[in-house]
Each structure stands twice: as C-alpha cells, then as structure tokens.
Image (cartoon, rainbow, N blue to C red):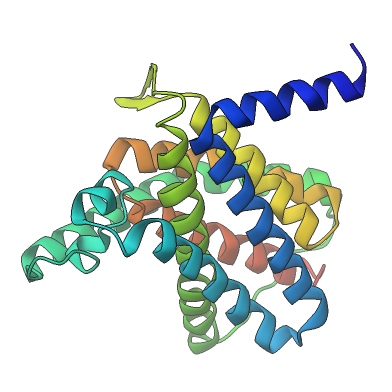
Length: 246
C-alpha cells in the first residue's frame, strides 16, 4: 500500500467520523496558530496569546454549552464554569483533592524523573539552586495560569473527552476507565509541542501526558492534572537552573 493509499483511507475514515474530523481540524488549527504566535510575537506576549487561544477553543467547544457537556468534559472547575450557583465548599473540596493527588504523584515521579533527566542531559555539575521564594511563587503561578490550565483544559478537557465519544474507554487502569483516546490525545499533545518549538526531545511530553490523562479519567476533572502539569514544569525548570543548563 502506497502513502497516497494510506492518506486516502485516512480521509475516508475521517469523513465517516465527524467527531474525529472536528477534533483533528481543531487541534491542527490551534497547533498551527500557536506555532505562528510563538515565532512571530515577542516572548513576553506569545505565552499569553497561546493561553488565550487554548481557552478560546475550549470555550467554543465546551464552556459555552450546557452544564452537562461541561461536566462530561471534566471542565466544571469546581463549579465555577457551571451556570448553577457556586458552592464554596464544593470548590474548596475540589481544590483540596486536586492538590493532594498532584502532590502524591509528584512525590512518586520526582526521583525517577531527576535520574532520567540527568542521564539524558549527561549532567555532571553539582546541583545549586538559590532562587528566592517570591520568584518560585511567580513561576508556579505563571505555569498554572498561562500554561498548565489552558493546555489541560484543551487537551484533557476538550480533546480527550471528545475522542472518548469516538473510542469508548475500554480498559481499567488503577480504578480509571481509559481507552484509545488517552493515547491519541497524548500523541497530539507531543506533536504540538514539537511543531511549536522544533526540538525532538519535546516529544518526551507524551509520557507525562498519559498520566495527566489518567488523572482526568480517574477524578472526573482536570484539576489534579493542572497542578501536576505545573509542578512538573517548575521541577524541570529548577533542575535546569540548578545544574546550570539554563
């Protein structure tokens, strides 16, 4: 079978699956626009512009619709994204649970991640990290608001949930029902990172993406994935600066 035959078969498959076509077209458009923003806009503006793009796409496909659609996508944000009156105890409980899950997983992966990171970058320096607490807090806040939340809302909230309507979750993994959607979403997530900034090592985000997707499936929302995503980014930044790589 030639490449043209494969492409033709893919086109027919997409035509027969309008939901899949919608997701592919949306992800392609958002990825292309993100790459253009990153390359054309000043760095200080690009991150904000890309975050707005992700949130706008998520709003269009999920948040502007009825509450049931928002809940199915796990994008209720502790109730803040629902039309019903906000219950503060529900918001607090959701926030607490998401932070606990994120911290728990961060403790599990921090050691192996550091070992793998040192091996990959062939680090021989001594770790020295002396950033002031305020700078660390600012980094965490920026990662949460401008990176983790927009990306998780789009990929785990919209994309993964929408793809579950194409491929129903069929495997039980750690008390969570997952399916092909978690793999396809992670591939899209990884490819988008490389398209935006063309360094092959950025494909490695495929692996934490699987964990973010599992958390979305296990907890029914994106909160824990957002916190863990931000924590991983901050941890990677800390290692890079601590070992003098950047």
